[in-house]
Figure (cartoon, rainbow, N blue to C red):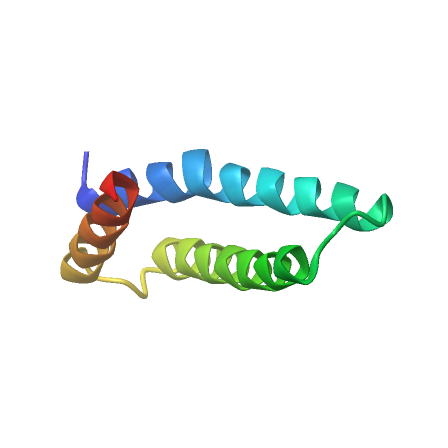
Length: 83
Protein backbone atom coordinates (compact mmCIF):
# COMPACT_ATOMS: atom_id res chain seq x y z
CA UNK A 1 0.00 0.00 0.00
CA UNK A 2 1.45 3.35 -1.00
CA UNK A 3 1.85 6.15 1.48
CA UNK A 4 -0.70 8.26 -0.41
CA UNK A 5 -3.22 5.43 -0.06
CA UNK A 6 -2.45 5.18 3.66
CA UNK A 7 -2.95 8.93 3.97
CA UNK A 8 -6.26 8.75 2.10
CA UNK A 9 -7.42 5.93 4.36
CA UNK A 10 -6.50 7.92 7.44
CA UNK A 11 -8.10 11.16 6.30
CA UNK A 12 -11.22 9.72 4.66
CA UNK A 13 -11.75 6.82 7.03
CA UNK A 14 -10.95 8.39 10.37
CA UNK A 15 -10.22 12.11 10.45
CA UNK A 16 -13.04 13.46 8.30
CA UNK A 17 -15.70 11.42 10.16
CA UNK A 18 -14.27 12.52 13.53
CA UNK A 19 -14.34 16.19 12.54
CA UNK A 20 -17.86 15.86 11.13
CA UNK A 21 -19.04 14.26 14.40
CA UNK A 22 -17.42 17.07 16.37
CA UNK A 23 -19.14 19.67 14.19
CA UNK A 24 -22.49 17.92 14.67
CA UNK A 25 -22.07 17.96 18.45
CA UNK A 26 -21.32 21.67 18.47
CA UNK A 27 -24.32 22.34 16.23
CA UNK A 28 -26.45 20.53 18.81
CA UNK A 29 -25.14 22.91 21.46
CA UNK A 30 -25.83 25.89 19.22
CA UNK A 31 -29.38 24.69 18.51
CA UNK A 32 -29.98 24.14 22.23
CA UNK A 33 -28.53 27.61 22.90
CA UNK A 34 -25.90 26.07 25.19
CA UNK A 35 -22.88 26.88 23.03
CA UNK A 36 -20.24 29.12 24.53
CA UNK A 37 -18.06 31.51 22.60
CA UNK A 38 -15.30 28.89 22.85
CA UNK A 39 -17.64 26.32 21.29
CA UNK A 40 -18.41 28.69 18.42
CA UNK A 41 -14.70 29.33 17.90
CA UNK A 42 -14.02 25.59 17.94
CA UNK A 43 -16.77 25.16 15.36
CA UNK A 44 -15.09 27.57 12.97
CA UNK A 45 -11.73 25.87 13.47
CA UNK A 46 -13.30 22.46 12.85
CA UNK A 47 -14.94 23.73 9.67
CA UNK A 48 -11.60 24.99 8.39
CA UNK A 49 -9.93 21.69 9.28
CA UNK A 50 -12.66 19.75 7.48
CA UNK A 51 -12.24 21.95 4.44
CA UNK A 52 -8.48 21.35 4.47
CA UNK A 53 -8.93 17.60 4.76
CA UNK A 54 -11.38 17.54 1.87
CA UNK A 55 -9.03 19.63 -0.27
CA UNK A 56 -6.18 17.26 0.55
CA UNK A 57 -8.26 14.25 -0.50
CA UNK A 58 -9.21 15.96 -3.75
CA UNK A 59 -5.58 16.88 -4.44
CA UNK A 60 -4.46 13.29 -3.88
CA UNK A 61 -7.15 11.94 -6.19
CA UNK A 62 -6.08 14.48 -8.82
CA UNK A 63 -2.43 13.39 -8.45
CA UNK A 64 -1.44 16.86 -7.28
CA UNK A 65 0.40 15.51 -4.22
CA UNK A 66 3.60 13.51 -4.59
CA UNK A 67 4.80 10.66 -2.39
CA UNK A 68 7.07 12.91 -0.34
CA UNK A 69 4.23 15.30 0.47
CA UNK A 70 2.00 12.36 1.37
CA UNK A 71 4.69 11.01 3.69
CA UNK A 72 5.25 14.38 5.38
CA UNK A 73 1.53 14.94 5.86
CA UNK A 74 0.96 11.40 7.12
CA UNK A 75 3.86 11.67 9.57
CA UNK A 76 2.60 15.03 10.79
CA UNK A 77 -0.92 13.73 11.37
CA UNK A 78 0.36 10.66 13.16
CA UNK A 79 2.55 12.82 15.40
CA UNK A 80 -0.43 15.02 16.22
CA UNK A 81 -2.46 11.92 17.06
CA UNK A 82 0.18 10.79 19.56
CA UNK A 83 0.01 14.16 21.33
